Image (cartoon, rainbow, N blue to C red; front, side, top):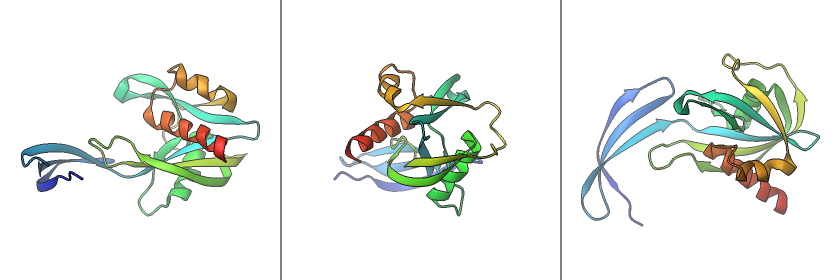
Length: 178
């Protein structure tokens, strides 16, 4: 395995949700290079399935790409919080539902070329209505999509963010083998 040895590291930005550092590394061929690394906490991504076999998606505007996206509910794991608790909190904040059952399906790195974030993928079922509770939900709308339409939704390109694409594909495979 060709690992890179860190020769030096300096933090160049420390924000509310992320830090940026620049590492100088020794590459596998003996050369030197720099790596710009975004350090961000881990997060959860939720496949929420209601009793009618609909997946709950959220539609929200994303400033970074200047467009509204259709996504799986997701969010950061707060300091001191475990992933199961984060799933329940994020579900209530983004969808107004609480899951009676959560099951971990796997996980993946969001963008390992420059970011440390790991996404834990969960299946949430036995949903009960709960008060929508979050400070930044004004621009979020809930969309129910029948499970039977997920494959065509993915192939049509209507879902554009990687976490939702990966999560939905993993869920469809889970249904085949589960």
